[in-house]
Image 1 (spheres, rainbow, N blue to C red):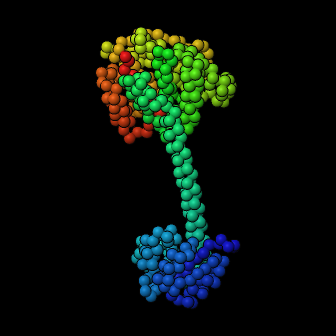
Image 2: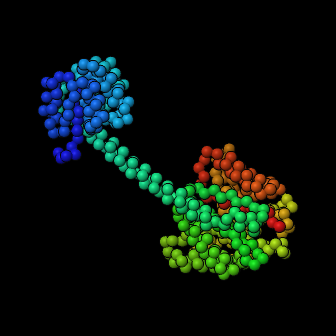
Image 3: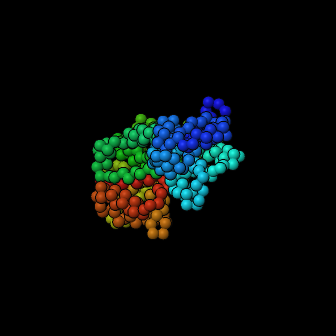
Length: 391
């Protein structure tokens, strides 16, 4: 074997026994110790791959030597095999309780000794290799986690700033809770003339793929609404869908059909009117204790079976009404006493119940209900719920 062949520490107070062992195990790199104290020092300095340890020795015996080896972090992983004439059951049990990996009686059978040594070395090498792999995986995981944390900062920085939201929407709340570090759900708010455009979107998937799609969606909305000053919700969705299909070169047979479900509302405070269009995600409006649901088109922002313009809805509102937009993550969460979804019906009840509260109180109430419902269950999707007190 080469330079990296396993190293064995032989521990016995008898020179004759050590010479016999050295001859039998000559294929390995060997070092010897004649006492437990010397064995502890050599093991700590040289870290052998295996220790063959006698029990009866001057000073500390083999049992105590083994216990100390296992109590020391640097030597705890080294397998110890007792090689002794004390073969009664009580001594064997005592050896295993001290931390031994195996127990070979004297006088030993050479083929059996070689087989057991080889087996322990094989196990040790496998454990070492697994340990190295785990260290590499941990290092890669730490690097990936650090990258995701930084990506989360970038994604948060891309969302509308709080002071900007407060300027356009004095009374509002945003409940955004990603399933992973980064989110496929996002929101966008902008001003076009005397209209305020508010958008809540749910990108395909979550985690990194969803985050990529959300950043792409925000960039397109900056162009369509921010630069081109489009404020009609249906037109915004039509152009957004065209851009997604073109950018990803989507066809009926293409592999990538990712996109987003989205709701767009254009609020006109001077006339107390608003316009809405949605791709799967509807608009909810609570007025005078009643809930109105404005439906969305069953057509995603991507290639699909249906290809037609989105429908634009126009309606009036009263100052003080509550408007809600969001993804399906809230209603889809499992939990509660029977491990069921909150469902859209449950979300509607909460909207009616919480609408009289202030926006800050509503956010706390929706958040607390979600956490209580989820309990110890896993969050299954990104969650976005946006509430606005209309003026």
